[in-house]
Image (cartoon, rainbow, N blue to C red; front, side, top):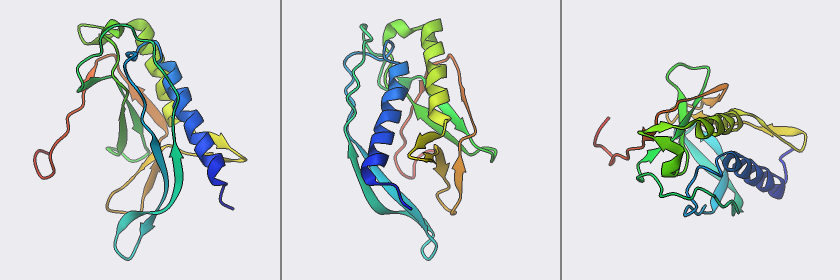
Length: 170
C-alpha cells in the first residue's frame, strides 16, 4: 500500500537535512535552501516518457550553514557521482557553493573532503521509511528503466557545473 504523503515528505526532508548537515561548516552562510517538490512519477508506455502522476507535496528545509568566508564562484562546486549497475549511467549531484576556506587552489582541504565523503554515502544509501525504503537513482529519459545507485564516487577537485542551452553543445 502507498505510504502516507506526510510520511514521505518527512522522510525526504530528513534525508536532505542529513545530507547537508555533513557539509554545514563548508557551505557559505549566505546560502538559503528553497522549497522542494516531491512527485510520484511513472512511465507512460503509450507515449514513451516519464510523467508526474501525483504531487506528494512541498517540503521546506530549515538548514542553515556556517561557512564564514566568501563562496566560490557560482559554477564551481564539489560534486558526487551516484554510480548505477549500467556503465555510463550515473547521477551527478553538485553540492551548494562551498566557501573559499574549504579549498586551496581548487582542491578540497581534508575536513571538507571527509565531509563530502559522508555526503556521498548518504546520497546513495537507501532510506528506511515506515517499513519500506526510498532509493536514490536515475530514470532513463527514453526507456522505462529505473537505475538505483549502488555506489558513490567523489574527488578532491572542485568541479564546474555548466548549463547548456537546449540544442547547443553536447
